[in-house]
Length: 97
Image 1: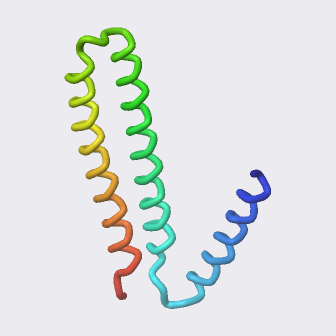
Image 2: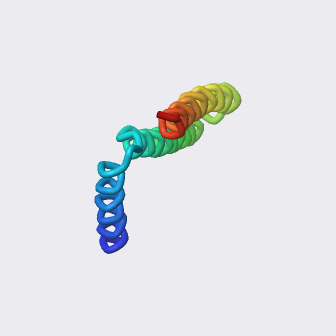
């Protein structure tokens, strides 16, 4: 795992050097990182909602339908924000300079 991380970091440094020497926008790697962070954050948020929902249903099974509905709404909101972050990142990365 550490090997993979170091290889990706080395490729990122090489790519940054290529971008610096070309006319490409310096925002492209940052936009890609931002889109990736949006996806990671969304996944973590939905995971926490699922875990909290399961705990709440285990404690109070009679309120399962209310808890499930609230978790679904919150998951949809997080998914929307994540999708917005990815779209903004792609728009920045694909912008013609």
